[in-house]
Length: 100
Image: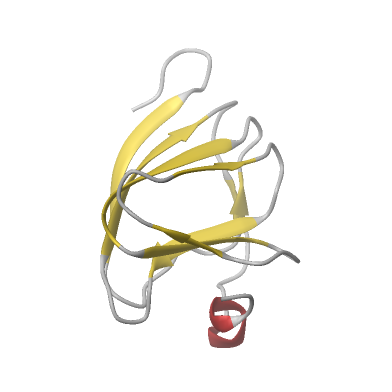
């Protein structure tokens, strides 16, 4: 769901080992862990494990992915700003493991 300014809020569920494609948001994104364990990584940086109650901010225009860990599903709230994300190529298995 998004408002007229392009700010959107969603609850997103991931199976263990699943993840988004590389993508970026024009206004950035907040990810708030609800359940399970997840992975969040901005391209070229170390990854973060997302646990229930954790809040991670991804800056405007930063290429990133998020998803479940190899052995845990994950759910999070996603609050995104500035309109629709730009989607890119799939995250490879090597990229999914890198930095964790």
